[in-house]
Length: 95
Image (cartoon, rainbow, N blue to C red; front, side, top):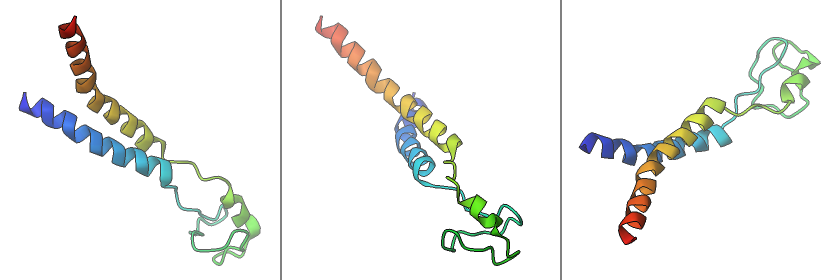
């Protein structure tokens, strides 16, 4: 029984961390021609590795890390289960 309580109490902070990382962390920009990391360059700059203007294609919107968002929401839902059960028990006992 104690392991179940630890699972529920650990799920909330871990879920918040994963959800925050998934929402605010982006993948690194890279040149679409050679794969060079462009994260330190200004937007519209030419790739220093291959000198191509294909680097501008890497400036599109970088997708969020979806697995972290899904895992975070799932862990938060798991952490909310005991609270929902407590509310149901309190309501039934009041009636």
